[in-house]
Image 1 (cartoon, rainbow, N blue to C red):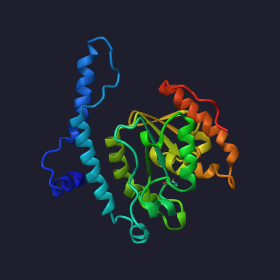
Image 2: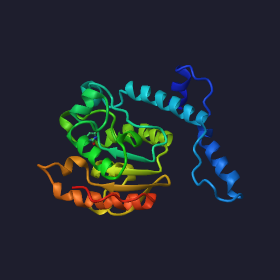
Image 3: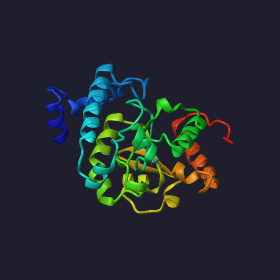
Length: 243
Ligand code: URA
């Protein structure tokens, strides 16, 4: 409803958001009886354009959000997400840190540099994946997001993921994994297998910040195991082990 109101106030009178994915579904259905040629048809340009428009509206809605009084009074700006609609993988982190709050882009600080290396080691480019966080505002002093803050931001995240429509999600760290999957299991128990978010396979792994030299760089090995598990499911080649 809130989205519908935003669309209207943004001057959008007709956005068949509910049907955005019907186009894809009906294409899949219509090819069901025919020989299987394309498993995941590329959405028509018009559907992509509608999703882009809806994502822009959502971004504006996030910008104006005042649901968490502490966060909205201390943030420099909201940090929505980075990457293309339809990205095959979405990397989901916890919340913006100081660098992200300053630049308005997720994962641009030290943890972001390490995430970039992980993405490159997988044989991917940062520009082709989507990156976002559980929270769109920086918690002061980088404290862990509070449950009510994660709950306030949840509808934004669900909608964002619906519009990006990734085929796989990588939850980075315990905060991202437990919030996305609504579990309280520790990350050590969640990693190493696939989970499900609305039909999308989810890999949970350690947060890049945890892998930094002053913390637990030895855990990089497990993260690489998790990424290899994902690449195998995606049917992609596994590059040589990164140094
Ligand atoms: N850590 C996160 O979880 N997200 C960011 O965007 C940056 C650091």
